[in-house]
Length: 235
Image 1 (tube, one colour):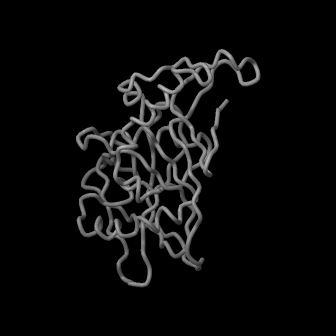
Image 2 (spheres, rainbow, N blue to C red):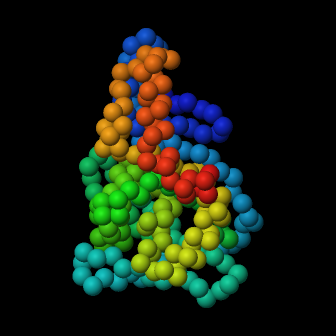
Image 3 (cartoon, rainbow, N blue to C red):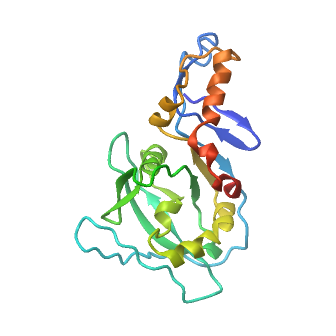
């Protein structure tokens, strides 16, 4: 079961198992909190007849390397982005994805992902369009937690949807960040993984409104996500 605290239009889900001994059978003795929370956003702009199109007539030097295809720049009246399709999976199954290009003017349905990159050398690998793509480890953990068990999920995550090795593309896509987050159906915020929680020495057994409860809250606010300057723009 999930314990959800709702305020200011946000559903907040904390990433750990908590025990509330004083609540009793009504909610159960232990509660699992998923590793992210979601914030709804209102779509902006008018709808057009634009369609998603597969941007990845992808090529590889060998079977293990994913290669980006440049975004469409043939028109100045439309802005194109890549969307990430996250395929179903469970537990420690490898993260499998694909990318497709779409125009923002077509009002595509997707969820934006907000997370903390962490150390640039701390990397994991996911499958993307059949090739292997290195990504920040925290993002790989976020995708592992966010995927459904029975259907794909359409996301936008900067480290994957923007070619980080293409300086011109990065500069262009950063200018679209406001629109990308505004048009998203909601934003999925990944606070951190088990290593981040252990680093904060967060308590796992809490009584409602106890001193330990407030220590838990302080520990959450000290997690790396809250130290990101990009949070202001994303919010």
